[in-house]
Image (cartoon, rainbow, N blue to C red; front, side, top):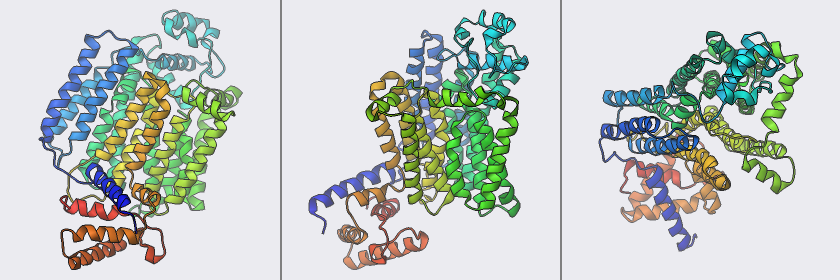
Length: 552
C-alpha cells in the first residue's frame, strides 16, 4: 500500500494539476470586455513608446516586456464559447495598428536589415556576394557605406546566409536602392505580409489535421499575429524569419497531407515531393530547418516516400545553390558562421564545464533526446512530428552557439500546434481554453527577453522553460506516476476510495469499471498492470471526472 503521506502529496498534486490545466471554467468577465480593456492598452502603449519615450535599444526591450504582459492578459483571460464579430474587429484593429505603426521606423536594435539589403544590392549589380565584399566595389561603397555609416562594419565581410536570402534581398534592391528609405519600407512590408500568410497556414493546418473547431484555429492564428516578439522583430527590425517559417509551414502541411487518411492517393503520392521542395526552400534561407529531417524520415517510413522526399529536397538545394556552389566560401561559411560562433554565455559555460567542443555536446544531446522521443511516441504520426520538432527546436535554439531574441519565432508555430493537438479531443465544455498553449507562449517569450536583461540567469530560465513545457504536455501524467512509483492497481484503489466518499461502494465500483472499460476501447494506449503492460498514470481518470463534474 502507498503510505498516507504519499497519498496526501499525490492528492495535492492531482488537485493542483486539475485546477490549473483541466477544469474548464467560464470567464468571470465578458470576453468582449476583456478585449475592450486590453486591446486599447496595447495600442496606447505602442503609440506612447514611439512618440514620447526616447527611442533606444533598452526602451525597445522595455516596450516588448510591457506588451508581453498585456498580451498575456488577453490570452489567459479570453476564452469565449465563440469568437464574435465584435471580437474579430477588436483583434483586427489591434493587429493592424501595432503592425503598421512600426513600418516607417528605421531598425535600431540590429543592422541585419541594412546588411542584407547591401549584399542584395551587390547581387543585383552582378556581383557574387559570397566572393565580393562591399569595399571591393568602389561605386557601391561610395554610394551606400558613406551614406549609411552604421553598416560600415560589414563592408569587409562576405555574405553569411544561403541563396534564397540573396535572391530575396537582391529583388528588393532591384525595386529600390539599398541606400533609400523605400528599401526598408518595402522589405518590412513584404515580411509583415508573409506573417499574415503564416497565420493563415497555421489556421489551415489546425483545421484540416488537428481540430475541426474553427474558433480554436482562428484564435491560434490571431495569437500568432499578436505575438510581441514578431511585431517588434519583424515589422520594426525587418528580420526575415517569416520567410523561413512560411516555407517550413508549407513543408509541414504537405507532410501531414501525405499521412492523412482523408487524402486521396494522388495527394499522398505528390505530397512527399512538395514537402521536400518546401523544406529545401526553407534551408536555402536559413540552415536550422535541417533539424526536422530525422522526424520527417520517421513519419514517412516507406522507402518510396523517403526516396521522393530526399530526392526533391536535394534537387531543390542543388538547383538554387548552383550559381554559388562552385565557391568554396559558400559551403565553408556555413561551418564558420553557423557552428563556430560563440557569442552567448550559455554556450561558453557548457564548454568550460565539459572541457571540449560544445558542437559535439550539442549533437549528442539532440540525438539522445530524439531517441527518447522516438521511444515514447509510437502511434500518432502527426502528434509525434509536432512534439519531436518542438523539442528539437527548443534544444537547437538554447544550445546554439549564437542566440538572439528573434530566434524564438522559429518555435512559436510548433508550440501552438503541439498544445492545440493536446486539446483537440476536449469537446465537453466547448470553451476555447488556451491556457496550456498560452502558458508555454509566455514562458518562451520571457526567456528570450531574460537573455538580454541578465544572461547570468540564463541557465535557470532554461530549466524553467523546459520544465514548463513538459508539465503542460499530455504525457506528463505518465512521467509523474512513474517517478512516484505508482501502478494502476494502486491508483484504482485510491480513486475508488475517493468516489466512495461521496457515493455508495457499489455505484463507485460500477462507475470506475465502466470508465476504465470505455477508455480502453477509445484509446488502446491506456492499460492496467493486470494486462501486463505499462500503466498510464491516474491523471487520465481524474481528468475525465473533473471535466464532467468539476465539484468532484
